Each structure stands twice: as structure tokens, then as C-alpha cells.
Length: 175
Image 1 (cartoon, rainbow, N blue to C red):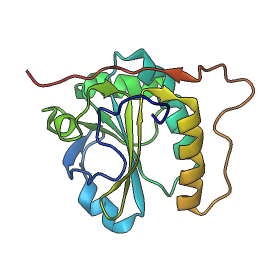
Image 2: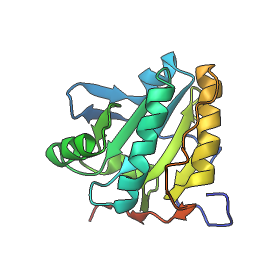
Image 3: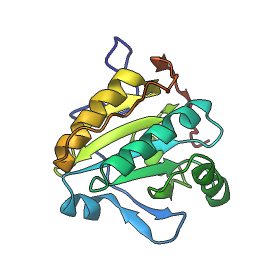
Image 4: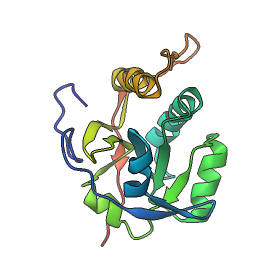
């Protein structure tokens, strides 16, 4: 967040750790390989019990539906069954992948979920968002439209009653 809060996760400008994680629908999701074919990848870390993730993920789904050419991955700290249930509950059609060992969580220095990272093809983190921040998500929306070479599609509607800011929940960490 850019509102004077201290960043805990990897900040903008940091080299993104590469990973290869299993998806809940099968197959693997290799960040290095995906970045070869895409200008950016959006990573959104989650924990299924986190109410702030419940708030944020429907908006990430809106981004996915608006800018289909930009890969979005939900990186879950939970098991496959819980993650599939989360995806169904919040209508996620983008890939949900499993950080079962929490190695990726540690590599991205997460202490809070949701944490979102926009990673560019040169493996640099272009944007980091921790928790729910409406203004940051609106900026991300504009940025994804540029990468998708599309007009900006509004992320929030007049019917959405969301807070401007909601701090995230404690991330899982290995013992």
C-alpha cells in the first residue's frame, strides 16, 4: 500500500522469485515459463479462511474477465479441497495453484494475505498490494488495461459497497 504503511512483502522493483507450483485443476504453473510468453503475470496469495481474501477475490475475478490476456494466478496456502471450495464460492475462473510447502510464501516474504504482485517479463515486481485497498486496485485495473491493450473497464460499480482500506490477515508461515 502506498498510504504510508510499511511494506512487509517484496516491494515494487524487487526481483520476483521464480516457482513451479501444482494447480488444483492439475498441471503445473511455472512462473519463468509463463513470463516468456506474457508481458506480466498477476499473483494473488490467499488463505481460504481470510475474510479480506473473500472481499478481494471477486474483484480479481472481475479483472480476469476484463483482461483475459493477462494471466492471473491465485496462490493458495491451503490444500486442494479447501482451495477448490474457495474458488467455487467466489467464482474464480483463473487458475488456483497450491503453495503446499509454503516455500513460495516465504520467498515472497509474506506475512499478510491477500498479497498481490504484478510481475513483469523481466521478473521484476511492478506492483505490490497487501490487504484490500480500493485505490490500489483501481490503479492496478488501469495498469492491466494498458498491458492488455484494451480500454479500462470499471472495476467497481455504484452498487459495490466496499471499504477504502481493509488490512489483510496473518499469512501462514512454516513452523
